[in-house]
Structure formats: C-alpha cells, structure tokens
Length: 447
Image (cartoon, rainbow, N blue to C red):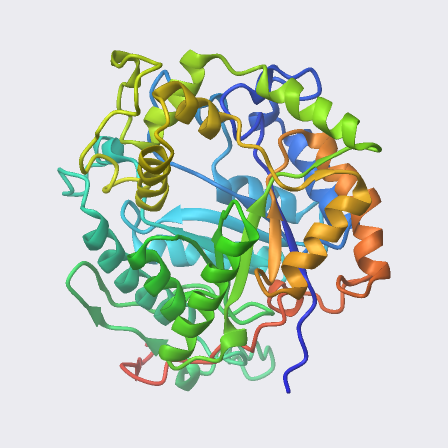
C-alpha cells in the first residue's frame, strides 16, 4: 500500500492582482507587478511557510482593456533568476509559450535558471490561448494556431526540450587541470531532432543541474490539455470551484497517467485557490465584500471579454440572457469558456450575472484559519488534490495563511514542518530525472 505524500503548497505571485480591480485596494502597492521588493517579500514569506514553489504566470498579448497586472509586469525567467538569489529552498516556476518560443533558447534559459538556483526550476508549459498573440511575432505564424494544433506543437516542443536537457551525463565535465581534460566527450549526446514543427540538432551548451532537469508544470482542463499533462507533465494545475468537481478531475488525471504507462504518483495534481482569512467569519466576509465592490460592471465585462478572444460584451443588453456566442472562445481559454456558456445556459443567467460572477468569484476557502484548514484537509484527505496553489487576492492573505493556517496543517501531520531536500524535485517527491536520452542520440566528436 502506497503511503500518501504530504500536501503540496505553492504561491502564484500576481503583482497587483489576478482580478481587474484588485489593484485599487489600499493594501496592494499600485506598482506591485514591477516592484522587485514586493516579489521578494512574497517569495520569502512563502519560503518561511515551507511552500514548495512560487509560480509566475504570463501571457504575450495585451490591449487597453487587459487586467492592470497584464499591462505592466516582469518577464517570468528574469524575475525568477533574481528571486533565486534572495531565496535558498523554494522552487521557482515560470511560464513560457510553446507556440511562440524556440526550444533551444527555452531549454537553455530554464537550464540556466535550474543551475543558478541549484535545482529549483520549473517550467509551466502553455500554448498561448489569446487569439491575437500571433500579431506580436514574426516567425511565420500568420494566424493563431487552433487549439488542437497548439497542443500538437507543445508535445513536440517538450520532446525537444527534454532531449536537449539530456545532452550531458551528470559527470561529463571532468575539469581535470592536470590532464587538461575539460570533458569526457563520450558523455555528450546530440539530439538531431527533425519534426513537423521543429528542427534542432543540439547539444545544449549547459550541463545538468542538481535535480537533473527542470520540473514540468501544465495548466489545463480541456481534453487536449489533460491528455498532454498525463503524458508529459510532472505537475498539473487547474481551478475547480467545488470539491466534487475537483475529485472528478483528480480521478480522471490519475487514470490518464496510468494509461500513459506512468505511475499515478508521477503526476502531482494541484488546484488554485484564493483564500480569504479572518479572525472571525464576519471579518473574512467583510474582506471579500471589500474586494467585490471594487469591480465596476464595465471592468467585469472587459475581464469576461479577455476569456472570449477579447470579445466586446458591452454591445449586449446587461439584464438579458447571456448571449449565444456559438463557438467563440473554443480557440482561447477553451475549458473556461465552455464552462461559462454551460453555467449561463443551465442557470438562465443574464450577462450582468455572468460578468460579476466571473470577475468576483466567491471562494469556498473563506473563514477563520481553523475553517480554512479544515477545508484544505478535507480536499486532501478525500483525494480531490495533491496540493494547492495560493492565488492571493491580497498580499496579506498569503501571510495569514502562512502564519495561521500552515501551523494547523503541520500539527495535523499533513504538511511538512521543514524542507527535507534542496531541489524542487525533492519538495514534490517526484522520481529522479532520466539521466540521458535512450533513443535517437549519437556521440559527437570534439575537435
């Protein structure tokens, strides 16, 4: 019988806030998305709480209606490299698009972050959902690829990345000053990849880190996304509003992992939550209402529009039924847009109700520290999750969770009291990385 691994916890550092009006709250620095001190503080609070990782999201297209955080924010690998210098244990996970990047450069960037941080790097694989992203790149993609094609590209991209990361065996660099041998050429392997979307020879010009290679994260609830995660990811991330839905997702993902010839423990299933914690229930409720009342209906419509390929919802009557959008949204945030259309139809909701509901979602993780800890434990014990990623609406919520909720979880024996390893792979209790490629490699001669 397998022993259940301990609860995993991460933090998404989201600058001025995930929602469109969070930045107006007095507790959020108005420049938080480009404030290194803010990022440092959030990372160090998370590390003090023995969290497994911090996570930086990203996207590659904006317009004037985008959320404030998206308009002016740090590039993930740049800020994570800086955070590597002001932390010592916590994992560092960054987002990079497989549709609008080159595998060799990406492999080199993440391998460098992994080396700088002594094995704490993770890559959040995204295919770039926003329809107009193609307008910012001149690599021959005139139109934004469809959902299925983007995942096909992602699958090949990850294959290339892993192949490049496995260019070197762990002891390839002998660095023997007496003999003059810097490397053992027999332990260097080229990739020679020729595929539908990418052609990459290799090898990569940086060796393996302490954890072997970066950890692969993927956020997706669509059919293509789930299949991709089951095949390639170490960690899969989703946001389910109820424990029942989370249980279904968890069971489905573990089944898919096994069907892909992997062990179910090879994939860590994480859910995103935005806890609101008060010393009393009424205090927590007041904090939620403060955030909700910052949002105007115009901002809520803009937030909704981003999910639907930047559709202009202001053209509709607010208090009439949610409009029939046909297939709009299936080539962007597919799982979200399908859910929204389904809930609107089944609940006979108006456009106003849908917009407000999406812009100011009410978290079930709202209440006193004991109540929040009870819910965290329930989701964990009932196998709805392997862990949570905190997406704090307010910076203070992360600190309250660390100082008030984490000690309860530690006392109950479901979350660690100290780091038991040095790498992100250690923290997540994942199996060792493959040392070198087993197929498709050949030795190269060094002249």
